[in-house]
Image 1: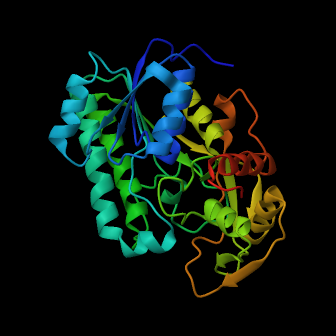
Image 2: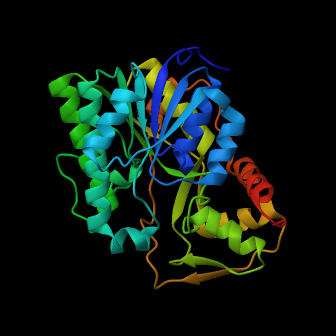
Length: 331
C-alpha cells in the first residue's frame, strides 16, 4: 500500500548502487518518484537490476560526494528542483575494518554529510533523510536506548571512526535544522540485512558472510563467543519505516529495528536452516565482537508505521533466494 506522498516528486538518493541506497531507489520509484541516484563506484550487477525494475524513473550519476564542487554541480544540474534527499552513502565495514580505518571513515563520512547538508540548504530542498546508526548509543545501558537520550551532549569516546562519524553527522544535521530551518530526519537503524547486502564488495558483514560460508560447506566463523544478541531488520522494512517517518513528519529522530532478538550463534543456525544445509559453527573469542547487547526503544517507530515487519526467518529466506538467483552456480 502506498500513501501517494512521493508521486511526482524528485528525490536524490546517495549511495544509490549500495546495499541500502538501492532499496530506497526501488521503493521511491515504485511510489511514483523520479529518483536521482548518486554513486561513486559503478556496480554493474546492481545497476542492471535497478534499471530493469525501475526503468526511466531512475537517473544515475557518478558523483564524489567528498568533493564539494561535484556535489554542488549535482544539485544544480541534475534536476530543476529536488524535493527530498535520502543520504545513504557512507564508508562502512565490519568491526575490525572500522577500528583499523577510523580516521579515513570519520573524515569521509563527516565531509560528505557536510557537503550534502550545505547543498540542501543552498538549493532549498524540503526534506533530508539522514541514515544514521543505532551505534550512536555507545554508552552501556540496561534499558532499551531511546531517541530522547542526547547522544551529542555526552558521547563516549571510541576509537571507532564510523560511530564518531554518525554522531558528528547528527550534530551537523541538528545545527542545520536550527540555524537554516532545513528539515532533517535522522533514522537510527539496528542491524540491517537483505538482498544486495555484501554484493557490492567483500562479504564482511555478518549475514552475507554466514550465507557464503554455509552455502559452500565451510564452517561459519563467529567473532567472540556468539552469546551477544542482536535484532535484525530486513532492508525493505527499514526503507518503508524511514519513508513513513518523512511522510508523517511527526518525529525528527527515530529508531528503526525489530523487537525480535537473536544471539549470533542462533543466527548462524537460522542461516543454515534457510539454506537447508547442516550448521557448522566455530567461535573465535580473540576477534572483536562488538557490543554484547544493543536494544532499541521502538515506540516512535511503532507509532508511525502502518504495516507489520517480517520475521527474521522469513527475511532470511528472502535473502537466500536473492543470493541463489544472483549466483553463477547454485548455492
